[in-house]
Length: 268
Image (cartoon, rainbow, N blue to C red; front, side, top):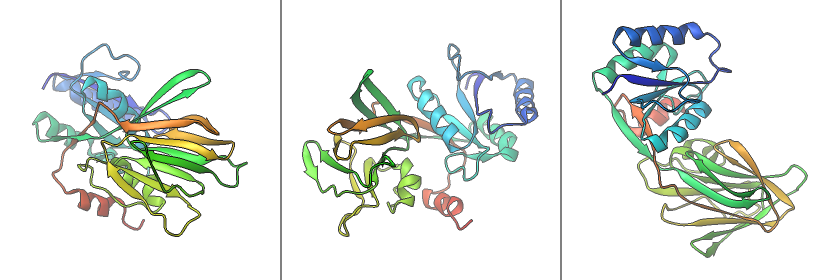
């Protein structure tokens, strides 16, 4: 491996920069150059990226690193930290493994959402999910959802989640969706509080083009990995497909996905 590592720091989570400085000094002793501001200046080629924050910080870092073919290691400064590989007190041990090349790189499917807005065409990439939530002024919303042009059952309700396997353990899980192994090439469609007993989450091929049109309700809110909020007006459509790039996650332990789920999602 080379000798440069980038830092992606959530300053709202990381209040004690002394720990970051100690990591930087540890790496410098081993002839590794650290780029603490890589998230703002990406002119230097780095070998991997350290994300300091919670899952939201990790999602942001992984999306931004994907076009550069850079793997990301998450250091958990949040609560659950499902996507983060190590806790704060385990960073040095993790770095020792990386320098010994004791790691694997997992590639994760991402979604590309495209739509036209008043400001022009917009495109967003999501590693977890694209979420459609009704406006609080709307009692319910109804969408027309199509898979490669073919309509599927879409009852009225509070909204809809279109998630990747990575995102299956996030909001979709709380809404009753299944846990999907991250190596499955599929997209998960989970209704939010549907007004129909027969409607269940649906797992579809990642090759499908999913279109979501707001049919009932004046507006709904759309978020991409919990951020970059947009508004969908009545009759407007968002198309969602498998993104051409994949996120790269740096993993240190060859533990199974189900074991990780049990550890992270146990009763807390």
